[in-house]
Image 1 (cartoon, rainbow, N blue to C red):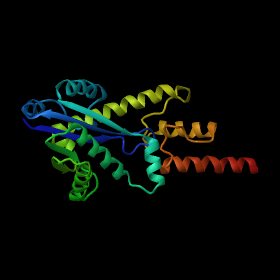
Image 2 (tube, rainbow, N blue to C red):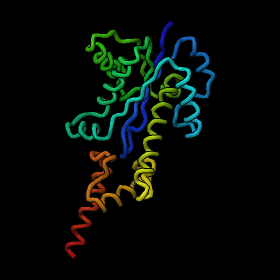
Image 3 (cartoon, rainbow, N blue to C red):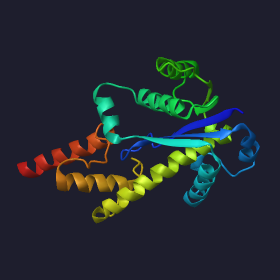
Image 4 (spheres, rainbow, N blue to C red):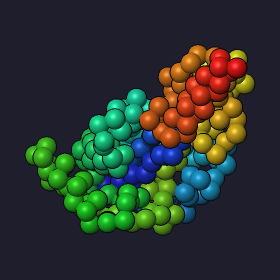
Length: 227
C-alpha cells in the first residue's frame, strides 16, 4: 500500500524564533477519512482547533517529523549570502529521506516549481536513494489535506515554542507573536536591546527589523551622549 506524505512550513517571516517544517505520512487507505476531517490550512484554524487536530494527526498517521531551522542557522546562512529557500529545501529533502514515502505533496517555495522539485530530487539522489513522486503546488495546504496536516504540525510546534519564549521573557511583558507586524514583539525587542545593548538570543539578528532597531537605539544613545 502506498504511503502519502505532506510537507509544509510555519514561521518563515518572524523576527523571533526558528522556522518549523512539518512532514507527515498517511497510508493510502486512510486518505478518504483524512478528506472528511476538519484538517485545513493551519492559518485558517484557531489555536485550540489546531491542538485538537494535532493529536488526531499524530494518532492516525504512519509517521511524522517536525524539523526546526533555528534562528542561529538562519543568521549564519544569511551571513554566508545564502538563500532561506535553500535551507528549507535541504530540510524538506531530509524529511523525505527519513520518512520514505511513495508520494509527496509540498507547498512549493519560489515561483519555479520544476526547479524546486529538481533540487529536492538532486539532494535525495545524492544520498543514493530513489526520489518518490513529488507534487509541488502553491497553496497546497489549502488543496490537499495531507499538506494541511503537515502545516498543522509545523504551526503547533511553532506556537508552543513562542509560548515558551513568552514565559521566558515575562519580565518584558512577553515577546508577542514574534512577527515584525506585532507591536508587542517590536516593543519587546526595543526594550531588550535598550537594556542589554544587543538583540535577544531568540532573535534573527540578520533580519532587517532587528538591524533597524539596533541602529535606531545606538544612534539615539549617541545623540543623548552628545547633548
